[in-house]
Length: 63
Image 1 (cartoon, helix red, strand yellow):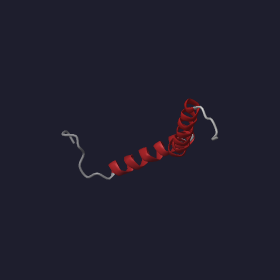
Image 2: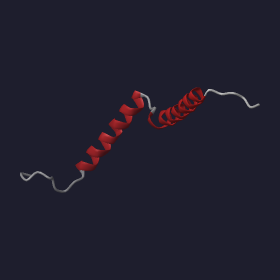
Image 3: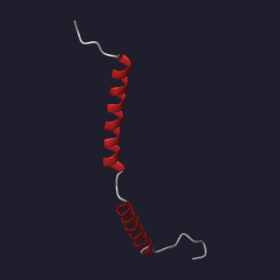
């Protein structure tokens, strides 16, 4: 005779494994420390300001 398994427990363990795998993928994608995020934001802001500083015409109707 085959091994007797509880289908509810098997379903729940399969769902837990899927959630754990998804969580691991999300940690890789989104798991940056706060210092790294703020540094990236500061660099992006600096690059944007430098780029805007090289414009010939401003978007202001007054200027």
